[in-house]
Amino acid sequence: MSTPTFRAAVVRTPSGPDSIEIIDVPLTEPGPGEVRVAVAATPVNPTDLGVVAGFFHELGMIDQPSHTGLGWDFAGTVRAAGPGVNLPIGTRVAGVVLGFDRDFGTYAEQLVVPAADLAVVPEGLDLVAASTVPLSGLSAAQFVDLIGEAPADGNRLLVTGAAGAIGANIAALAPDRGWRVTGLARETDEEFVRSLGADFVTSARPGWDAVVDTTPRQVCGLAPVRDGGTFVGVRPNIVPAAERGITVHTLMAQSDGLRLGQLLAHAASGRLPTRVHAVMRLDRAADAHRAMAEGGARGRYVLEP
Image (tube, rainbow, N blue to C red; front, side, top):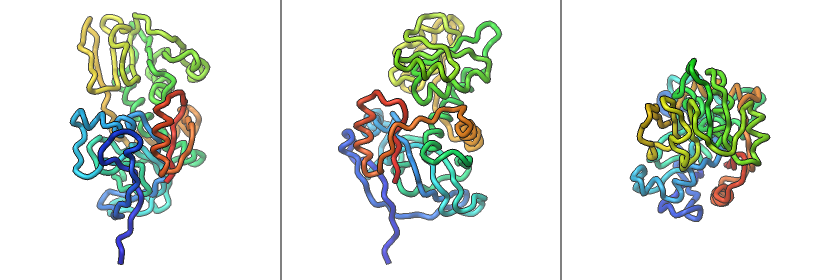
């Protein structure tokens, strides 16, 4: 009797979208505290493009002997549950798989993950939209945790890349901590950024009490931050040296099922934006990567197995 398998997208020798392969992977059953999820949707994130291009392999962050799995967040339906799990079969869930050095990812038909990392998707939020929340939503919430409550002597927060998925979520969440948010983005994104309740600029003048830089290159650095302010960046390998009394943080996103549940509820109510640019089949993952690399899309390319 043959072993059941499922399809997954991986890279063996990363060299861009053409190196993405669809392979058959043996089906495994969940262990204690785990569930097996039938993946319904998984978004293409900017980090995926870096993995496929070999960027993180070159940094020594990935060293897989056979292949590297692709994909970080997902939404789907529980198919099987291991001992100690109280999630009924058929429950709609979403979650995120973190870490670079792994042979599996969310670009797959099936996925075995810890139940504690999952959150139930609320009724009224479809799985494609829900799949875009875990990575960007948790990253944004944890960015806001790093800057903390707005101090009494200044609450002006600049979010660079405010039209992107993480930046938009920060703009939506930071006012809860007393921050007055201004988003930095292209002129063409002004209407969207203002729809989040944020002010809008196209250049980073100095003097901000806090700056959260969600852009890949972090080109602004500490220049826009006032003396004694706070800076948080998204790139752990690009950490500017502290100066002028500025507190510098870098984000390493963490799984948090409880927090994810809150974020999915915000998405269901419309408080968090869930923007989907296009939905494509898993076997068109390479096409999705090429399209995303061209830029200009506001919203995720989402793969459906």
